[in-house]
Image (cartoon, rainbow, N blue to C red):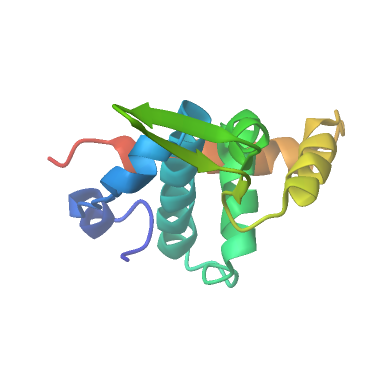
Length: 139
């Protein structure tokens, strides 16, 4: 992945594939969680971050980038039931993402605090600026 903000990065096209089986069983939060996770990979790779290959760090980055509520709502399914004609599919419990539900809730509590630290605000603003490059149309 080229460095974020470079002309090469702006020309790069990233494609995310989601399986039909995942889309059939996942709720909206879980689909957003999956896409946010992949966007976080792009941001971390584009900044050449040392933790870019650590999946839990990728999930935490997605939460920092503003997808925290989707992680809280989509990190697990207690029961999913779908009826297809005479067949019923049931999944008793499934986890989504690389963080455990307890880790997601803990990160949510920590990230939800008002720190009042200017460095924290600057970091969030920088990460938000990175997303503008990710979603910008190639020229």
